[in-house]
Image (cartoon, rainbow, N blue to C red; front, side):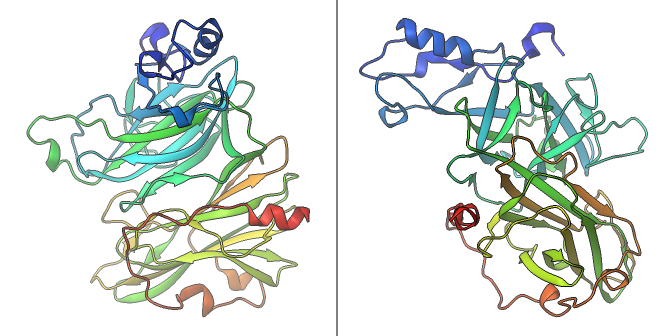
Length: 391
């Protein structure tokens, strides 16, 4: 990494900030600008209008930060590439929205990790999705990882509920953001062109009332030829912070039919978190169960119903010829800190029936009706669960 040029996360170009009551020579505004100009990797430009300002001071201002691959050229289909930028050292900021920028339609999926340290000192590096023992590859994070966001299948932008944000930098353990892109094809780059796909993050320096997090569940296994199988996972949640789920996302490749997630209490009381067809846009969908709370003693579980129409066994793995079984639960908490562990992954052979009763076998593997793909904006995320809990 190029010395001090990669010492921080955000650089704001105030030349584009225009407001009738402000000039960029305003000493109060200069102090605000100074707080945001944290010697970033490259200039980040703010798109602004008069509606973005409150009174004479841009307090609680939400600005856009592009986290994009630095014009790389993927060499092989199914390359996983990672790119890291540091977060602010002296102050924390909050991510309150995400929008993917897949400029050449070459990204199969994009993941954003929060790391204490990146998995490599290189500017960009070959990396596996969560871990890898492949030759010459490194993990996205060195040690402790936290998944912040995931995108695939032309999913639309996501705005978090009011007063909810992913806290990064400052005293948090997220000292680096790592962008990971899985390139399913390199055909768009055969002419020597480069890629700067990635994410646009909506960021604010205003503290948010509730901290956001993403709980990831995944399952290993295999899908024999010409068969329909269930891949399942479950983990006890034994931490202090209460989690209030507000959105979920599923991910599989071509064999996935339905992916569902549940909260289990007392080993037998099942409450659906969400379920979806992974062949639809893999956006974060709102959770319909109002007042849902995850707390110590609960179990989080997920099932992927896979239908293998092929003449060969398909394994869970990182390439497009493999499969994946992933369920993401986005939540907020009223705790001052997030859970230490928000990843649940079980190996091949794990089955719900070996541990639980009253399994909603049919409901977990079927959708109520075929859902049509739409170009409409995703439903607005609201905080009904917390409001009901506090009433």
